[in-house]
Length: 549
Ligand code: FAD
Image (cartoon, rainbow, N blue to C red; front, side):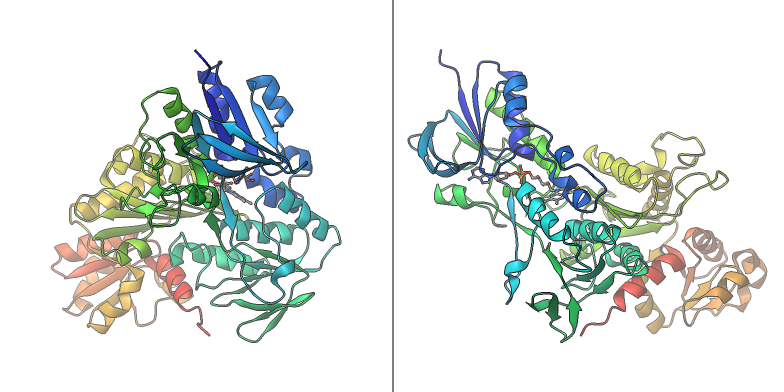
C-alpha cells in the first residue's frame, strides 16, 4: 500500500509539533512541511528577550533546522516555500519556491493548516517605520534598529508581548513610552489585578499613557491623540494578532464567528481531509462554551500533537480552552486562567469573587513575598470559572494548580482540600490555593457574605457603615475615606458603639474581616466583609481613577 502523504503548512509551533508526532506514530508516512519564512521551529516566545539582550545568541532561538529535522525525523521541510492555494477536489496544494519563484503542485492525503496569525498594525500616517514582532525576520529588523542605539522607544499596546518588549527595551537602557488605547494594561486580567503591573512600569520610569492612541509618527517622535508628542526613535506595535485565514478562505473552508478557522473536536475543518491548529483556529471557551480566539503556544503545540493523532487514526477529543497564561513585568509575575470578572459580568453570569493576599511561602522563612490571588466561581454550582494572580515567586504555580483543578472539574470549595507540597521555603502548611478554597467554602456555606471593592460605594450610598477592623496604627497609615476604626480584638467589648444598620467590615487582606463578620453576625449585626480588604480596594480604586481624556 502507498504511504500516506501529509502536508503541513506552517513550520513553527503547531505545524512542527504535528510533523514530529506524526513521524513518531508512522515511520512510513511521507511528511512535507511548507514554511514561507526562512526558519522553522524557532522560539517566538523568546524573541523579546533576544532583543533585550537577555538571550545573547540569535542561534539560541533556532531550535531546529530543515537538516536536523530531516536527520532525526525524516521530515521533508521546505523553508521559503509558500502554500499559495489549495485545490480541495484534487487534494493538491500549489507551492511557490520563494527563492526561485517556481510553482509546483503537491498532492496530499491529509493537510494540516498551522499558518498562525498576523500582527495587527495601526493605520496611521508615518506608520511605515513601525515594527511588529512575530518571526525571525521581524526580530532581525528590530535588532538592526536597536544596534543603532536609539535613546527612545514607543511601544503601542500593553498586552503580553507589548509588556515583554517594554521590559526588554528598559533593560537595554532605552527610555520607553507605552501607549494603550484602553484604561488598563494587560486586559485579560481584571483592573485591580493588573494595577500592580502599571505601578511597577511607572516605578521603572516607563511613561505609560492609558486611554490614548498614536495619531501619527514622524521620523523620531509620535503625536498622540491627546495632542502630546513623545520621543519615538524605535517604534513597535503589539496591539494584537489576526488569525491568518487567507489560504483557508480562498479554499472555501468555513470560518467561525470570531474570524478564525472553524474546527470540530477532531481538529477537522469543514473539509474532513484538512485539519487546522494554532493561532489561526477558533477554540471553544471552557467557561462559556462559545468560540474564542486564543493565541498561545501551549495550545498550538498540544493541538499539533492531537491533529497528528487524529490523522493517524487515534481517537481524540479536543478540550475547551482556558487561555492559561503568564507574563513577567519588571520582576512582577502576572498569570491567569479561565475567564475574568469583567467578561463574566458582561455575560450576566451569576458569580462569586474572592481576593486573597497570601505569602508565597511560610512567613517565618526568609524571603516570603505577598501575592494577590483572585478566584471566580459560579454562584450556583461553585464551579471554578477563572483565577488570576500577581506577585513574585509561586504565582505561576498557583495558577497552574487552579488551571489543573478546573480541568479536573473541581469546585472552588474543593481547593480547600487539595494536598499540596509544603516545606517552609516553598509554601505554607495551608497553601495559598487551600486558603482560596477556605474562602470559597465559607462563601458557599453562606458563612461570610462579602462585597467587592467596586460595590462599596453603592453600599455606603445606601447607608451602610464601613468599619475598619485593623489596628489603630494601620488605620492611621491609610484608610478608606469615611470608615470608622474598631480593631478586631476590641469588637467584643465595644460592638455596642456601632450603629444598628448594615455594616461593611474590612481589614488589610480580608482575613480579619472574615473573623469580624463571624463575630458581629453572632452578636446580632447585619454585616458583610469587603472581599480582599484594603489592599484589593486600593488597587481597584487606583485602577478606576485612570483619567479618561
Ligand atoms: P506560528 O508559530 O506563528 O507558525 C505559523 C507559521 O506558518 C509561520 O512561520 C508562517 O510563516 C507560516 N505560514 C503561514 N502561512 C503560510 C503559507 N501560506 N505557506 C507556508 N507557510 C506559511 N505564547 C505563549 O503561550 N507564551 C508566550 O510566552 C508567548 N510569547 C510570544 C512572544 C512573541 C513575540 C510572539 C510573536 C508570540 C508569543 N506567543 C506566546 C504566542 C505563540 O508563539 C503562538 O501562539 C504560537 O506560535 C502559534 O503557533 P502557530 O503554529 O499557530 O503559528
